[in-house]
Image (cartoon, rainbow, N blue to C red; front, side, top):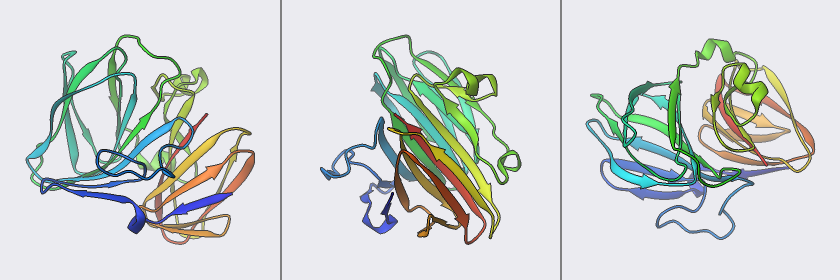
Length: 234
């Protein structure tokens, strides 16, 4: 079962330096039918103007994954971590008992990214941060796990998160198909960052969302060259 959520129906906030779309209720956007999908709580589609960004602010008890689509984001946090994450790469932050962080676009161009929040399987724990490049060529025609709470994925190089969830990425050429087995009781949410796809016959264009119900094998077919991001959670 595929529930399509067209880009035009997403929540919208325009702050000048930030143009944000919300797949789920967030800040001043509230839709009781779009509160979460399984453990996935937030999927924001952000455009951050050059030389601007999110000043230091706190979080706790949330797994926060940033997937950079274009440009780069520079991270700073109260643990002393700093890092610059470029397009196609991923950073994760486990907020745990509490952390303050800032995310700045120090580039001369707009940075675009997906910010994804997943509820942890248990509260507390020391906060942590990490980032890693994931070459798009390695994802050609297949899903690669970018972040995960499962040991087998961590052994393959995924970034660690404290949730019964995976964040996956794939690239497909026009005409290529990819099957994904979504287990019973699982929830998947998929967004094509670029291109156009069909999921079991349901058409999605770039930045549309699709909520997928577990217990099925879904077939994803690219109508145009596409870059895909998906969360599979409990």
